[in-house]
Amino acid sequence: MQNIQDLAIQLGATLRAKGLLLATAESCTGGGVAYAITEIAGSSDWFDCGFVTYSNASKSELLNVSAAEIAQHGAVSQEVAAAMAEGALANSQAHIALSTTGIAGPGGAVPGKPVGTVCFGWAMQNRPTVTERLVFSGDRHAVRQQCIVHALQGVLKLLT
Image (cartoon, rainbow, N blue to C red; front, side, top):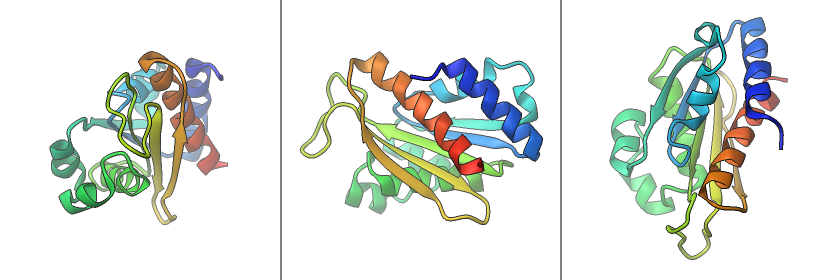
């Protein structure tokens, strides 16, 4: 697994070089992505804001994710991850946004969505939103760390 700090530094250099701002919309990571980003000195040059929307109500209120979409697909779904990233983009000054929503464990699993299931969204102005669903292994901490790495890698992939 790639080092989170190294990834955040690489992401910051890439965003700064392109003159872009990033926003985050996090559920299962609880602000871990934003924390990793803001650990980097100078991140205010390329990081606009982070939304920690742990409850379904906050996803709707802060990110404009429709309650109907959450009811239809579940909070842990690619559809909701896409809506979260798009909502972060719409409610910030950012040019690109990422989202995480998942089941870090140890409880919370439902049929078809085991512990470790995480859905990601990456939204960028004038581009289609990209989503992905992965299942990570390990305890709660391990799942969240893998999720942070993958979220940062996803932004880098989108920018290259």
